[in-house]
Image (tube, rainbow, N blue to C red; front, side, top):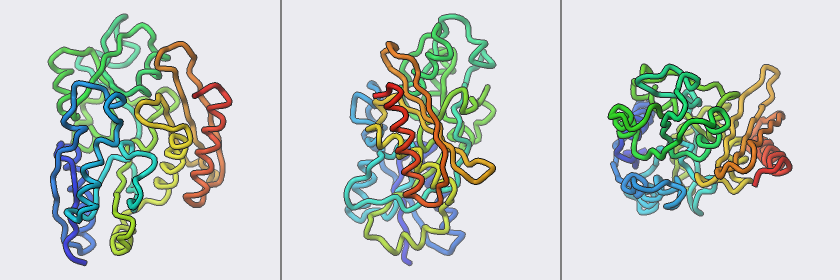
Length: 301
């Protein structure tokens, strides 16, 4: 097919992701170019995402480029992609997942336990806020916005004692040495889709579905589909303190763990899990929906 144009945000991590997909497509004989854009989510840095429209602010302009034909595909961090895409758009594939865990980054402290009483920890994720409060109710959690480099700069300037970031972004940019500790999911449950890349297209582009199919990673697509179904069923957005993470079991089944917390701190953390065979996207979504039912039954809302 003719040149494939990738719409991408212009942060260093977004460009890495777009270049990664470009290289994979070029290996398969396609001609590929990038179309860099700045989104509203990149421009508004003085307010939390939950107060300005959610993570969809990172994808709206890219979708406009797809709709107008300026670009053919958009590469997203899957956790930034709204659970329900606008009419006329589709997720063509999910690539093999990088490390889905959250990471503690600190110039002085080697672990969460090592932080002193009242230490300042930066994150703007409500999910991380409620999980951190459950682990260390004595620390002070302060908002942290900006791209990955901006967040690290604010940490290095001394504005925070530690910050929490996705391990995947640090690894992709060769910054894994900044990771003090990566939290195991049973300690800090990741966000739905964390560590995975998704490729969005116009739903009518059958040619692109065919071209992108070899890039998909089936087991990771099914796992993230289950996670996203939990969030969709709960009405999930970045304004909801919700975690969901699915893992394949040795017997072949898919286990999903989900957690919900009250951002006001008046209710205790709710944690559930469910397991099922998940051989296709519908079965994976059904598993995620079951986890959401369990969450609500346990008091999540």
